[in-house]
Length: 500
Image (cartoon, rainbow, N blue to C red; front, side):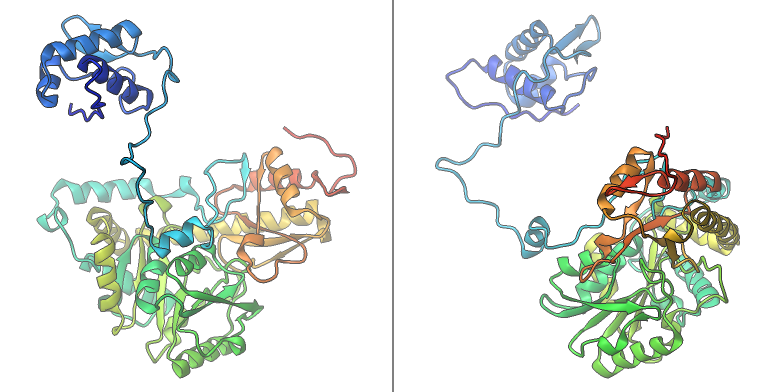
């Protein structure tokens, strides 16, 4: 193996000691792992332009200290049990005499490091036994056999165009498959030329930000709002203006004329679950056409609707080319695939494509090829139908469990569609304490407070996903919540028992 060593150039010490110290530090710092084979002395000596005896002496020193072990006829290895991992901390990078100038960061990086950019709350998978995390699909229900068969078909005799660089916009077969699906199921008005395949909806938001506004320009977001969108816009220097939402979506009458961009989730407002009415949609589009603004429509989970007729996308009502439509397959299939899409007005598509080329050239071609087959052969929509029925059962189980264990003390909103609801619990006076206590009881719940930037909800409100937790776990999790004491108030049964 090739080895890079930072050897002290202090010529007052023997070369073998300086080499031994560099190897020792590499072991302590974890660059050389226990059981890993080191290069033969002759090879390392040639690579470092040292005498072979120098390398032999360094190896012998480290064997004596217990950092290396020799195996007869096999070579020299890092010892399986390092005697003292804190023997010496790794050296800090050397500085020029008198110190060196600090690294000068961009304003983009400074905004992130200074905490000016709201950070999306990353939750570890499996953090709680009964975890009501939002945005995780039912992993065990993914049609892995169909995906495996299609992957094998693609890999058995892959065409040469899948083995090199591909089109930035995405494979033509996938763009056509997505366009047909969106036209049919979401009422999106587009052709394949408008579709850009991206690495999830988060990249779609970042690309839109890069091409739509300059630092200081005004961008409207919903209040409350998805943190990932707020962070992407803030990182790109936007002056962010939150506009309140009501039961019909964002208040279009409060939109400032100076805004260049408005970000909305009309089919299932995140996180409140409100559905934007037809009148409000027309009002929003009229504002965009009058002011020259662009609307970013984030259609993140509208495939799952349980009450009333399926809703068409806002983009389908746009006749002036003012809407950029984004969607993700992370919620529908698997987050690990990192696949999403943008449907851009023809005038904006080249700019977004160019920004993506500069970012990462294109999305992995093999995944794109498999997904195109997955959609064309009907697996995608069959999976959607199955998941819609499954999530509807889990949604009903969640509503029933809160009714049974909390009664009127819990109010659920946003339950008509999607993969989560908002739950207000009237008896909870300290949201953070309740969340911590729930974690101690093995229940993962998540406050909605971080999604608000103006005024947080008056009652303790939690965003609770139900898509990745089955009906029995839902009921047990809610039952445990009903036993939690918070802020001096008892929530649920009069006598609390510690559940394990």
